[in-house]
Image (cartoon, rainbow, N blue to C red; front, side, top):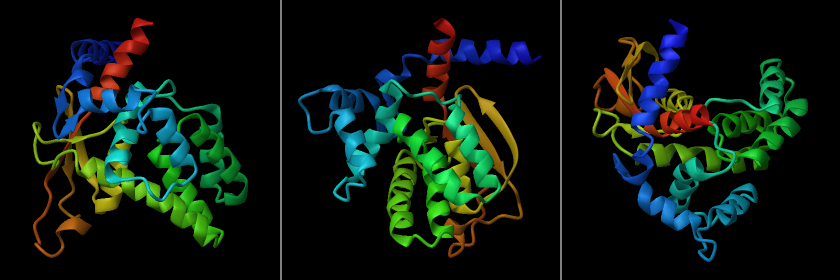
Length: 231
């Protein structure tokens, strides 16, 4: 069954491998590739990466979008793998050994700075160590990336699904909305999460309207999975 599941994923990845050359929900991948791959442009991807690592406060919403979705064209993009340092960081983080965890987390971000989970956990590390200035710097990047995902769709259906570059980024959105899932199903390249009846969510307290399902488009990580198997 496990082998069959992998084969199914690969097949879908092959079918959708050209999705990065079109518009997905509200994300124009053609435009993002054009803007981030021109070495003479101020939005050239390595330039944006340098600014992100330097905590450049002048980064715009559009530039965060380029950083997030442009990551699929980046050499270190790997939506399904963890670097050795990342695994070691996670162990130290779970032990609440924040001082020792921080250098490893920074190493992970040096390899690929668009790692939402590590950015969040580094924010927590600095917050727990009462280093508020650094905590705020990581918080700014973290919430800017979440906003980028929120702006990619509305999460209410397949055609308007939130677009993520890693399946794990779905859980960052769930955490931000204070939602818990009871079921997860894949419909083509859309991950459909059924939300627990007991969690109304942060975003809907005023309206008192419960979110029943959230939709995430995962065609970009699927396409990368296909490329990995082709190699």
